[in-house]
Amino acid sequence: MVASRIKTLREQHGMTQAALAKRLGITRSSVNAWEMGISVPSTQYVVELAELFKVSTDFLLGVDKSPSINAAGLTEEDMQLLHSIIQHLRQKNAGGE
Image (cartoon, rainbow, N blue to C red; front, side):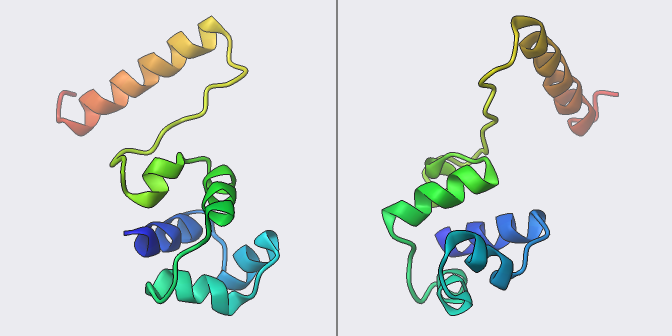
């Protein structure tokens, strides 16, 4: 679960294994081992990965099935707009439009 999430998130962010490794200060082979399920990242790297990819650690670890959005710093008006956009997209994806 963790392995596939790391790989998917890395690819979604257009990063190579080497680029991710450089960003975290580790070797590319360490990232490869995580993605292959040979090893798992330490708690420190789980937190760093979650911050880098803007997801919760629970999502990264597979505890929470849905990604989260960090809304820190948004105004109440921003939050209302974001909520409207999310509702619109849910209706669109459910075939409601």
